[in-house]
Image (cartoon, rainbow, N blue to C red; front, side):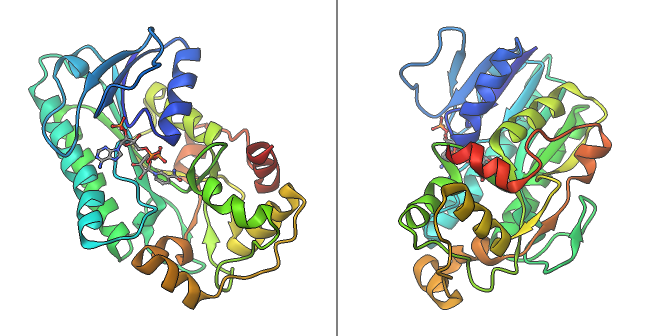
Length: 299
Ligand SMILES: NC(=O)c1ccc[n+]([C@@H]2O[C@H](COP(=O)([O-])OP(=O)(O)OC[C@H]3O[C@@H](n4cnc5c(N)ncnc54)[C@H](OP(=O)(O)O)[C@@H]3O)[C@@H](O)[C@H]2O)c1
């Protein structure tokens, strides 16, 4: 298949592009600036989601589009950054859909990133994809983002929104930011540690996105989270064990709020999100257990 990928230079996108190429797909990257060192087998078009529509030729030639681009969420949420987090996703997706509407021949499927942040902070409630959305900045962004992607349904395209949890992999993502304190033995749970922390190994997430492209039985929201959910306290113990380091220094809630401001919402929210849609469609996880997944990710 010919698959166009936005945000392909990011943490998830890099893993995804390698996987798609290994599976024999031809990849067309949409990025804000041309990066050096891209494989000659990859096509590239410039697109800045905050500025305008993607070039139609990057979409008309494609069988599928995977849309990952967005301003990083893990930074201090100033009013300006919040605007960028929202606009790069919501306006960006609206522009992508507008361009798809203008295509003479359009792809069959759009797989669009979303996040478990959709659910807000939900305590111990088990969250299947049909659960109602939550509240808060990130939940609102995810709702608008998913709605913008769903508009592709009116163009006759299949749409899959992958509500992704914390992605575990080497060289990036949340784990890269968590590792320094753990490596020097001062890691610990966040707040009470009772919050559910949906996670997924990066290889499984890339496999799930490929699965979503290739399997027409999957459509609508899909929780991108491993089946064996853990609380933040359990995750902390597993990470300490994976690194052979103690993990006994809890970070108090007030310190998290002071350090991260409003962004602390993503560190302390509880989302018990289960991968019902993916498993019902026949997807199986290669990294279902958190300790083994962490061992692999930190080795
Ligand atoms: N990593 C996670 O744990 C996680 C969890 C839940 C959801 N997600 C979602 O999955 C998607 C991919 O995540 P990721 O971790 O791979 O993100 P990432 O490493 O930050 O990469 C995202 C890519 O988006 C593009 N981008 C960055 N800022 C942008 C902006 N202001 N406007 C438009 N494009 C911008 C960049 O590509 P170019 O420079 O090539 O344009 C960048 O490589 C994101 O939308 C993220 O919200 C990730």
